[in-house]
Length: 356
Ligand SMILES: [Zn+2]
Image (cartoon, rainbow, N blue to C red; front, side):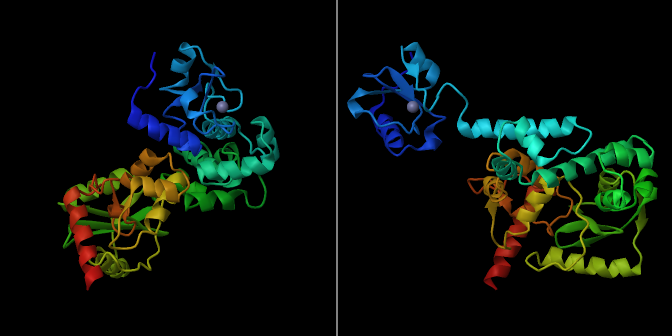
């Protein structure tokens, strides 16, 4: 039997019960000797007398000791919050399994929720409206189909775009080039690049037709070019022309003075989730830091701490998307795609600029 016998923590457990603190729901259950029932700390039922209460590690331990789960707070079922997340996850699976867009009302019915609550919860869990989520899904499918060598019209259709006047226009918007160009290996869409050195070491700046698409840092030009090839396997790489070189000068100025505002066209390519994280990173002022969980909170997905770290690591635009301003919860620097020393250096530069 796993009953707790620790007076000090029992005091804090009782406090959690008295305040109906739902953060404690995952940590223990309490059982009432007089009724034979066990509850989550957040249970809304009237509180028993302290002297009749026992604490258990989990509902199984309480049941072993002869208590029945409360019908109101259902400690033997997943937490309500988890149940809601599960429904949204199920909705995402339904969308993924369907080749056609599904209207909100229908989707809500399929996960047994009202359209209003479904819409709100979907946004809360995924950060996107069901409509925007489906749009991102179609975009991903289209890229996959085209990468598999599917014909353009067919690929656009199979990705779930409805035929009509904006049939191609939508697809173009998503791909950043026409579907035909994309199909031909990006028509070998050209990416211009320049390598050079700045006070952070060697850098590479690359630009697509839509804007700056990569800013990489490293120790030697050769490996930076190799990294660029890996990031954009379907594009042909070309050494930048003179007008591009002028734009690069602006980028270098940002690399050397990271607090500076950037007025450059950026071609930010990533999943909907990554884009959200990167947007949140750009809101962290220079000279300040945030933790991975801060960012997860800010984008409304407090559970997604690991995925946030993944999105930071996938950033292709060094300094301009300031993933160097994200540190561990305890303030430790943690990893940096372009080396922890460089991260430290950047934060020092920013701290200094702030004093000036
Ligand atoms: Zn209860």
